[in-house]
Amino acid sequence: MTDDTPSRDDRDVDDEAQVTANAAGPNPNTVSSSGMRWAIAAYLGASLYDQRDIYDTFDWPRQPDAEWLYATYTRNPFAKPVVDRPAFTSWRDDPAIVDQAEDEQTDFEEDVEKAARVLDLWSYAERLDRLAGIGRYGVMVFVTSDVDSPDDLSTPLEAESLSTSGLDAVNQIKVFSEVSVDNIEWGGIGEASDGRWGKPVSYTIDFSPEAETEEGRTDPTYDVHWTRTVAVPATRLLDDDFFGRPRLEPVINTLRDIEKVLGSIAELAFRGADKGLAISYDPEKIDTTSEDFWDQNDEEMQEWHHGLKHQLETVGDVQELGGDVADASGIFEPQLAALSSATGIPKRVFEGDPAGALASAEEDTQAYFGMIKERRSEYVTPHLVRPMLEWFVDNAIISPPSEDIDRVDVEWPALRVLSEQEQAELANKRLEFLGPAVVVKEAREMHGLEPQPDWMANEVANSYLNEMQAGGAADGPGEALEAALTENRKEAAAAARTQSRMLLGAEGDD
Image 1 (cartoon, rainbow, N blue to C red):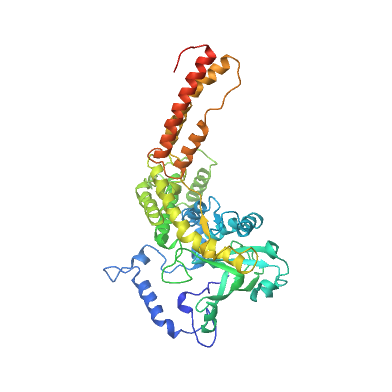
Image 2 (spheres, rainbow, N blue to C red):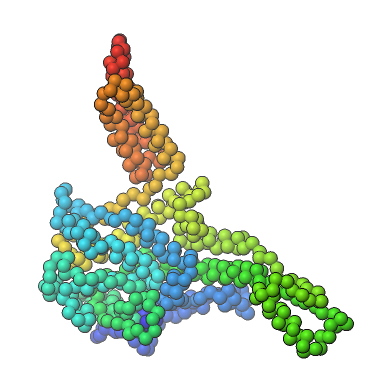
């Protein structure tokens, strides 16, 4: 795998031809942009003193490439959650695709559900979400029924050329990060009519596993036409229409510092546990010039050091070297706080406590879920879900929606999780409502009668639970639900009193 994947600076919009992304030589259309980027890179590390560059001093990478980011993602224990956790939470539940033009389920909705089930579509989308976040983008490749050899991947996909119809036309789905893309061919002015001017028209992709380390293996690299792909940026786009900023980019320096802190702690602990000894000999008592003495001394020291002897016999003064391991929590905690601040992921997640044992964990969770809700609507839906659905519709693999694909609603289930306090309130509501029913239950049991339903108790309580989970009952039930609870409690109490007196032989009115 190479690191030739181009930056935006390498794109050429030549009027006469497409230009390969990593073509040699400067592009006059992007010289000013390149100069700006180099200027920004030059400012990284600059300080008030010309003699000191803080990036060199702190060993921070200035312009990490995709390979560096991938290595950090796979080896740094705090880099992986930065990339994975938002994707895992966003795809905790599958989205519901709703064709707004119809009240009943349409063929389009049925086909999407079938694609999700047969092709495991949302699972691949979640994987692509993570892979895209490692570098600047990710690519999903659809291997369709018209592909008889790898060379066919480089040709445009045409719906009428598919040898099978429907979902059977998709033989395989492959997902890749930027690391696997060796080259991108960008569209010139000739592709403007297709909307591909300045956008990828072909990818050169290494199809071997990205984590493959086996030496001597031949990496299968193929050209893939853009019509057979869905490309996803790493994050919400800024000035560029294709490349997103890597998710690790804002925390690269912090991750590097964490590695240094963890490595230093481990080294200090090792040296502290394996302290050396300094032995001084009195030359008036020992002939320190004798080679035999030093040979015997070295042998005894080696036996003691390797555990062959539990005591050290010497006539010299022995002094233990090394010191105690300092508490590094004061250094480590600010690094985790910086990670949390930059990513929006609660600090306790990086600390290995995803459930949250602190009182503030519930507030952190709700704030995090709020960020994920925004991520679903502003990133996952427009950059992942809709392009994938559009690809299936454009190639006649699933039925089209009743109207334009942009009018299709992508609905996500609520992420809200009830707090301990809310669970306690819900339990009290259930008990308060079911209380009268208990009287009737005991009376019927006393007379050997069949149990009676609980007068909608479960239905009302479950409605309250659903309202709380949707975020509408954080401070208590809504007015309508509270009224329903009150009315049902009255009905339940009246029924309980009436039936209890009847069953127990009581007389009189309520």
